[in-house]
Length: 481
Image 1: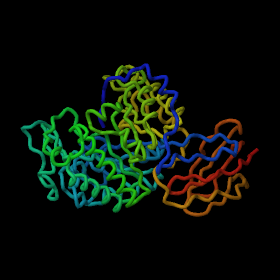
Image 2 (image 1 turned 120 degrees about the vertical axis):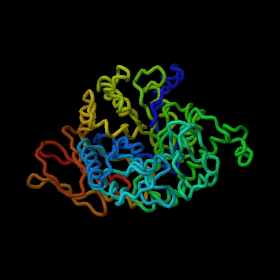
Image 3 (image 1 turned 180 degrees about the vertical axis):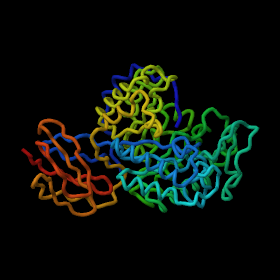
Image 4 (image 1 turned 60 degrees about the vertical axis):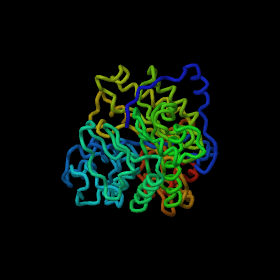
């Protein structure tokens, strides 16, 4: 994930943008499903609560730990922390350097796991991670960098050897980075094949791309590619954008055709124009066409930032998310960093950002960058997140429906200090609590069972969730006196 400081769009449009926070157009990507309003109850907002776990350079995991037992324990410790914080999704980096976190036909084992690129760690890392996350009702989204193969300190250093399946003519070398050439059809097909391999072999909940497309600040020698493949395209800049468009659409189409329940998300840089002009990523078009299910701009700057004001960027993305559901990426790593602006020296800034996103009807969740900073808890920032996330949240419905609609809970009743209900099918149940029928309720628990002990006076309602996170109509509220 990049940490960008960019030029600010004219502040004069802010008021108009903030007033336009409405849902995007229709299409094949459904809007999140909320409980019907005819119950008269005020239900809490659904939220995906996510954390990025970076494996490139071992940043968050495994941090230089190369023994299987210790790696597993480090990962489990993360999940236990997330569960405690009511976090319900992770974006784990499984392809950061043209590598893999499983035995892939296309790319070598990641050096992050063993310290040596291409070395089998002796266990199925990805299966272990997915199983442990799912055991705690935490979604696992496989985070990939689509083009990067390797980095080096300078042009005097050598890049690691290419995987045997990669032809040298497929890559582009720059002073400090090697990437797959986005212009080549073979590269786009390879990316699609890697995604298909991942979602076919493993029960991931999503595929996630970060903000690296064409590398920023480099000079490209792609005139020959433009001549060969750019028929009908006016400029070489449009050609580059078209190459990335084809890759995004190809991945989306492959997911829909292969495993449609998988959610496809992208986390672009905060400035829409920077994505378009510098990274050649026309994210607005992807949102308009419905080629991504979720867009998660990295709004890592503070409210009032001179170049990337959090509030202004939020308004811009709200108005340009269209068919994509909108989440917000937060610069969690900045809190308590002495080099960060004054706003990040207090946890109040995170509260202010959440106040904005929760009022925004288009926003369906938040993601923190990155995992290791939750353990540091500088300036009490993790305590603040715990307070914000004090109650569980229902995951919004994203992507495509593959399961039958959930059957509503029946026979909701209170017996001998227990709330009980009947549920049928492969569902989880959501128990809502209302201290006052005129006030917003809260999620008490999300459970695979059909009863819980209750001892607090108030009103209770139960709904069911299927594997797509589609929610049934909630039951009428019943009172415990």
